Each structure stands twice: as structure tokens, then as C-alpha cells.
Length: 283
Image (cartoon, rainbow, N blue to C red; front, top):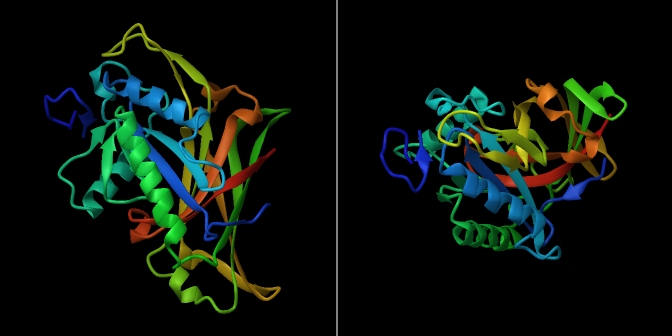
């Protein structure tokens, strides 16, 4: 449902990966809330796609991010995974594309203007396949190699609240680094899988929901903050970010449940995603 609308269909308000090789990619972003009765079906769609990929490995990589927004918390259930950062990200995207409203469950892929209702599984699959095909034929950022290492702090294999990210961006000498500096943002998202919540109040009262790809930390920086140096036959740009996990106690899980995604995005972090890779997670 759109924010303020009565519709019930959806709720509104250190391995280098060459992301430009002739394999496509799709960064699938779901905006969701445990306080929205329209969202559990979308969570099931996302989990099913994670475990049964709609894309063959040779076609490309698919990365999943589930942002829990906080603008439905007033309905009676404060989503423990929600954060104002994720609501702001969705609203900034909406403003960038001059959309009239934000809603949940909403899915967009590769930061494109088009979005679909997350519970409509076939629409989500169609959008993913279209974006993977599109990326496999684009050439603007073919030569960009992107990698990231997320170092989490914790005890044995259990994480705590903090971590650091080291991002590397490699380009050959023929590539204009100025192309990487204008209005581009590099971001990293840390996600956690297989987290079950027993919802006690609100529209989903009484449900036990198991969710995947929950974004538990998100950090970004402008590409012009990247420090470049010659390395081999090209250039490598490096940047470090600090991350925090506000609800770390909710994710008392082994390291294997966590994944990281690093991506470069146009439009000041609101437009098209031009490069993406899985981040290595260590402790």
C-alpha cells in the first residue's frame, strides 16, 4: 500500500571480481517491513529466489538486499531490523526518479527507475532477467574490477557491533578515472540470512517470519574520496569505511550467515548501479 493510501496490494510511504565481463549482474533491493501485512509474501519470494536462482551461473550474479524501513513502526510493531537510513534511501530514490510515493513491499533492480510489488514473484523474476541481460551487453564500465573485504569484530565466530570495510577499485590505464569520480557513490551492505522473528503486535501479530538478506549495516562514500595509485599496468583506488550494526544482539549467528555486497552507483547513490561484487567477510 502506498503511504497514506488504502490499497492492500502493497504498502507505500580479496578476490577481484570483474563486474564488466560478459556476464551480467543484478542487485535486487527489497524495501519491506514486519509491520506491513503485505510484506510477508514478498519475503517468501525473496527467500525462494535466493535458494532457487532465476539466473544460470554462466549468465551472471544476483545479489539480494532487504531493507527494513521504519515508517510503518507506528502501526503497533516496531520492526527490530528497521532503520531510518533505509527509509531515507528509498525516499531519496523516489525523489531522484520523481516518483509520487514510496511503498512496501517494493523491489527495484540495479537502481533502475522501474520498480515492482515485491510479492509478485513473476514480475520480480522478469525484472531480474531483464537487468542481467542488459548488464551483459553494456560496455561503459567493462574494465572496472571491484572488490571489498569486510572485517567484523567479535568473539570466536560471533559478531559484535563494529567492523571496517576495505574497498578496492581496479582500472586499466586506458580507462578515464574521471569517469569514476563524477556523481558516483561506492556502497557496501552487510546482510544476514535465516533470522526468525515472532511478531507480537500489529498487522502481522502471531506470525513467525523467517527472513533472508536482511541489511544489518550500510555505508557509502563519494567516489572522489577514493585514493588512486599506479599498480601493475593500471590504477587501483582504495577507500576504507567503518560500519556499525545497531542491533547486533539480534544476529547472534555464525559468520557463515552473513554476506556482503559492494556496488558503485550513479546519481549520487540514487541512480543506476554500474558495478557490483560480493564482498569477502572475515573476522
